[in-house]
Length: 321
Image (cartoon, rainbow, N blue to C red):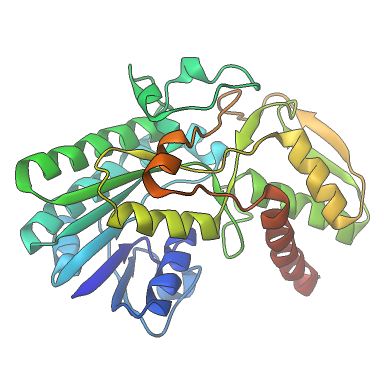
């Protein structure tokens, strides 16, 4: 039987496909983008260009699958999700059609990649935020657009498990980053965007960078290797409730810039844009439930992850130059 990864041409999907292949699985990797636009193409996988928001395509790619990792979604960093709420919510078509296709194909396991954006906004108003535990998603007040779609699709997964016996598992991702991801073009997230800006500053000699907001907004960031491991363990585990998958290492944007300055060996001047999208003021992952359930938690430090991410982005920009 085949493992299907939707969004396999994306950042997380590409890394997940690579790991599943290394483990000896037969993998079908599906993405709506043409192959030459995939972040990673793995020759040992069955690579399919299809639109999983279309019911017909969803059913075709689900045939013969034992497990589906549904990572496909129209999303990006804060700049994208704040300015494309309808586009983000249209991902509900992919989420719904893949659940229906999995049910109809007799698929045994279904993983849904949710997001920390499902959490209630009134619990994220301070940079010194209390880490968010799974129950903080209700009463519901998620990120407008993107967060609502994720929360709705979590419930769909739950009801497909209850009503149809599909073995669904849900992870709430907290800011995943690493090499082979988006770092320019408007969809990039903070670690990649800041790595790009500081690499450009070093290569150009102009050490002034633009920073969205005052830089005191706080987040936690999870390196891709921890994400891939956690995703598979959640799928295999017995826990049926949505669970945080993220680092608990809380930093401000200014602190992350400081780490990148040290990695790059330069000092930058920050030009703060207070009109730019900033999202919630503070967000962190409470990993208590994850640790109790799976016996570990994401622990690759931000410094170690940024060193690899910065080096990858710097080398691409240097080659262009």
